[in-house]
Length: 630
Image (cartoon, rainbow, N blue to C red):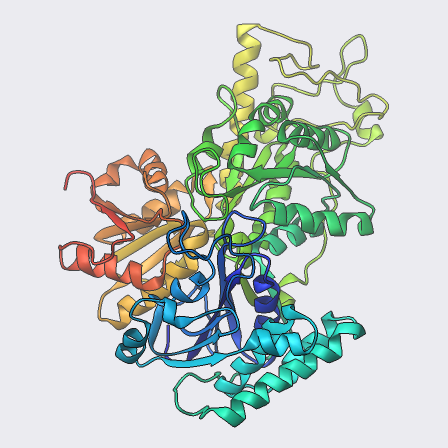
């Protein structure tokens, strides 16, 4: 975190083009040589309701949303349900301005569309402006857009006004517009961009504030990507050619990206009637010899527990993605939380076996999407990618070279017909698909239609050819063999350190986290060390099988560990203590579950206030849970 950064927030109503406008502006900042990170907040509505997107831009690397922001472009809500302050949801029309003031930094800049918004409706607005030294620029963006014939172009006018106030050239914005817009609307948008830019330059002192666009440069071509992009492209590069699903926020983004791309590659995407059918189709496609995936979010994934158990029992490789959101039930569908961890670890039936990976960054989302397919198909086991709305929706620039890797279409331990001829068969010709004594618990696999590859696939416990069997000896042999896979997978993963370490090797304190909070924790660690504390962090992405040795080494190396997660019940801390219960007295928790992800300052405050000073949290949005025995 640095003062030499622009954190630009654009706010409006759902349906007002906030997402597309912010994404294009982020690309323009990236093309100008800056590193960018986006964060979005939106309601569970098709149209209307306060929404915003933040873009953090700096010369240095940025891994997280910032602490507050310094520039607000408030467009108003074109689809507000009721402008009456006494309405159930309050005056929605004014919320894009009124609800964004608390996080605006001192000395910040406000542009608001006076064609839709009246600052006089906000209590104590003028007093707050004076108290915080905010620089306010009311502009009739709606009127400018109407002069050009299309009210939606007020977004473009707002971007032009922004560029004038922060000293940003319009070149990269224009280039993006030319790439994205058809000729019919391109020229009017370019005209209104310049009109707003020139009007601000002429009517205001643009040097009256200190918020300016940083400068920077990139050594190589950059891509602006989200975690959903990375998961999808990782799956495609690892050979996935079949996906089945049913829309559910926020998993829909992965499903949509895959659906757009698979037909171009000779693959298939199927939208089906429900999540049971989706996972079942993916299991069937994998059984037939395709690399297949499906996925959903909380409630939809719950329906997948039956086909997930079928994949475990039939040892059919499959990758499922689960995009967490705040629950239970429908909960808050568009808000991030990490509280599906236990659901994903333990759903299904009996002593089930699966792999669960929870990437912490966009880079890891790509890498672990590929890893998920490798593990699933090499070890014939379901693998689940666990992420949340934060990682799935936030965007960050990454070097294009990070994704220049060879594709991998192989299906794992699958036999040719020549190899099948040498495998054991029963007298009736059935292949011993589920042999008892094999290396790493992985039995050779045939594909339907292969000569000599015939066997039965059933959800019941079965013998070596797939026939239903309730023999105690067979049951023990099959369970032990399937469990052996997890030991082999853990050994496979342990060949290289897999955690994400940050901070000094020798430190007094540790912060442990998983999934999407990793970048935020790392920025907090930098601040804590700058403040004179000795702190390092470990981001864990392997939930099952758990990296016990690696996490134990980390915990043993420090005096005390703060576990940071977006749950109310400390599920990740619970998983850690399940595997490393002897260290329970070293682990305390910092929890957040109000629908917003952590900001670095909240972690810094939690660590300093409680761990260092032994006091209480200053923040009202996070909760501290002490170590066992405190």
